[in-house]
Length: 351
Ligand code: FNR
Ligand code: LAC
Image (tube, rainbow, N blue to C red; front, side, top):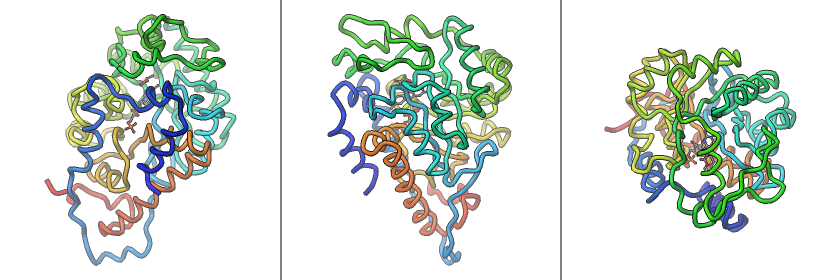
């Protein structure tokens, strides 16, 4: 079993509306495809004769111990994949020993996500509303519910053009709410209800000052997600970010944006060890994880693979997906001659 097989199984279980929303990228989906290909293009230079009889995939992220350097990327509307939605994802992540990242646009409230896996580490992803009071209240609730960091997503000033969602007139199924606000989507004739929500509700006027604002109102460290350039990463750190996530939103926003594997080193070098750098987009193999860490990422996040696991097997499916990646990572590490995550360094890469 690998993630390709999991994707195929999930596809058969989801409605056209849900599959289209989960799988699609923006416009011609060039960045969506390139994210995967860019990891595959990188070649490894394995070490030999290093006694790899014991392999340890554990590490820590922002001081949180994890069993593997792979975290749950925030993704919206998980009750379209499984009735338990984000609750199951939180339990699956807890079973796998990693961090759950809940989304602003979740279909289970942040308090209920916390209650599903009370002892497990969790972060809260933030979209900022035009009405700042709404966002201030949400991040204060997150702090109160034991979320230990905010993921501030900055690559969505407007929604990318997802053609499948326009074609399907994407909408949340009946009974599914934006649970953090107890609200249904605005209804739209013909087009995507998400596009309408973003247009009417989210603030397109965000600046670096909002990093400090979120930190102040929540009291939590802020990681900035959606950075693709070294100069932007530096500016985020100077504005008080506790970390950056190199991401193009899984190819769902600006099509033809660079693949994350191709800009990770630039971002790592720009922040020069001042903060931890995470990365997501197209990570599907244990070797991809080795490459991301070799380029200097502290850990990676996976988006769609979590949804595939959720669709196929709820919390157990999510845990199983992480187990597959952990097995692949352990094998790749042994074959690279590294015993611990800390031994993964840039000299493992051919360039
Ligand atoms: C996302 N992503 C996302 N990101 C975010 O910050 N807030 C969100 O609400 C969502 N929602 C969302 C829904 C769906 C269906 C997908 C597939 C993705 C982006 C996500 O966090 C991550 O950046 C990408 O999914 C990573 O790429 P892969 O692993 O899916 O290739
Ligand atoms: C998406 C948003 C909600 O990518 O982040 O669909």
